[in-house]
Length: 305
Length: 330
Image (cartoon, rainbow over the protein chains, first blue to last red):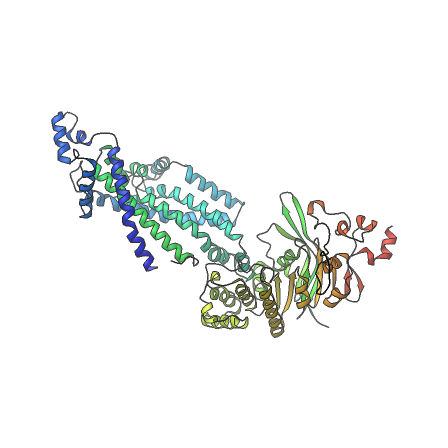
């Protein structure tokens, strides 16, 4: 197991190199001229060219890439064109709010998703199942900006229980994490339901019942551990998506996270920030995949590394 | 006189499907004495397995439901017990072994955990006592390296080993009745013999009654004291094992016996019973076996015979042995 993890960690490096090339090319293909944006709309052609030289954007792409990469290997992500602050600081400021929001959303999503999924699977085609799946379909189909605005309207404006936005205290986390977790909870519920329904038809479930075990133990111990194997993969992926920051939810709740940073830096053509964020997302995804694979091995004894 | 351990009267289990109800078990009567091995024989779909699942009340994940009859075990009517009382019987007083050893063990728990679970539940053993008991059970069923096997997972073991594990699990709480549903069908012939030998040995040591469901008459000859033959959800013949082989009455039983090749006998083709088991949709009106029967009479197509005593301890459901009655109806 340890050797497997070390091997996989080394495997991250070539993947990230390829990702960095793609990201670099992609970012430089976005139409629009950052030098013009930095210099301002009234700047003369000469001024814009000066800014371009200053930013190093006049050099060939290959040279720019190597300059960027050599900085990266020394831990230097560059400077934001917009704020002139180090990109590392920009991202560090925004990472923690998004990270904690993700964690809270996933906690909700896993608790409610699992509960709804298990109840629906065990009460198949009864009212509990219909209610659960109705809730789940709603969770998937409701656009998050609408759900967010409705929650703000009800709980912040009408009842005044939670703030409308920002992240000043723990109460700020509640509404955005519910908004963000709803969709994930719905996906987890549907996955758990179908996976558990398949497992409940297995012969070893009958063996468990034939032993005289309580139905709860059969479901929560014998069936669920098997049913969780596909659910874990899916949950890991969702976790990765959320870590990237949700642009919509962060905008609705004025959340100072990575999603809003990304949209700001794209509209400003802030190349170093966009590149750093995309590389970070790629790294997070790879890391989560590794964690999922390790969990897989723990849950499924048939997998040996 | 031996006591009747299990007595089933007029059991009817129907399957409720979208296309209507299907009588999977349609009025079955039989009993098992203490310490006896009863063979339940018949083709696929004749209701053998559904009967056993009805006894265990494990029809929950099927569309099946017991609609009539009684199942008495040690004087208690199993059908009237609460789910909680039934759980105390399952795995404790009545245990079951299934056909598919490859899929009947949970892949994500160790062997020790899976056997120990029942032991802790029914015998109230603590962790250490349960572990020792499991190791002893594994040794009893002939598993080598028992101390190591308890920490292994099912996929690390062969089919024959897994069936031994299933037997160890079933026997762990010393049940008075063991229901074995085609326990050797999925195994190699050599392993089959070993498993049958093991079941015989355990039966002798523990005085367990066995209800052995099989379609293999060789297994019946090897293991059973008494046999019931089922066809289309009903018992068609019941007799001592020697009687069934020496003096079969029902044309279906004769057909089954003729379809086994005999050593030293030269034949070009094996005998087989023509046709197939009737599907519920086109169940014949009279005797369910009439369309395939070589000795079919007019009355067989109109009326269904009763299961009557033809000789001492030998019952048969066929008009050939009910001449008196046949004449009256005609």
